[in-house]
Amino acid sequence: MTQHENNNQSNSTQSSDHSGARYWGNVEVVEEGDNYRISRVEIKPRHGIKPQIHYHRHEHWVVVSGVAKITCGEQEILLNRNESTYVPAATLHKVENPGSIPLVILEIQNGEYLGEDDIERPYDLNLVKPVNEV
Image (cartoon, rainbow, N blue to C red; front, side, top):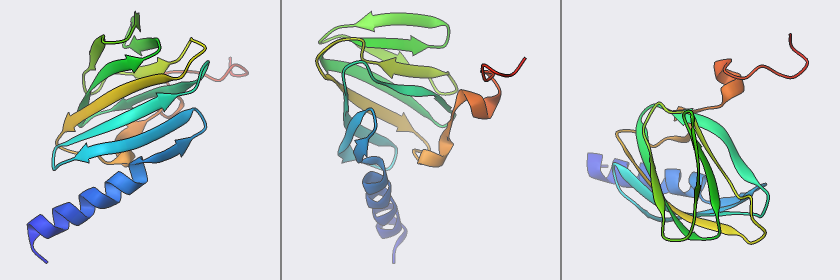
C-alpha cells in the first residue's frame, strides 16, 4: 500500500470515528483531506459541547441556523445565523445552544493532526476543580 493510500485509509477511519450521534446532538463529516475536515454539527436546544482544548488544529465555526453561545479562552460571545468565529489551537473552548431550536454550525478544522486523541477536557488539565474538592 502506498503512503497516499495509507493516508486515505486513515482519513476514512477518522471520518467514521468523528461522525455520528452524541448526547448533545449529531456530527456529520462533509469533506475531509490530509490537513482539514469540514463537519456539519447540530446541537440540541439547551445542550452544548463540553469545554475542550486541542494542540494541533485550529477551528472555524459558521452558524447556519440557531444561536451559538461560544466561549473561547476568556471571551464569551453570541453568534447568530451567518456569523462565524475562529478558535486557535491550544485555546480552551466550548459551544452551547441556549435557544429553543437546533443549532447548526459548519466546523472547519485545519491542522497538522486531526485525531480525536488530541482533545483534552478541563478536568483532565486540572483547570476546573470538582465542586466537592476544596
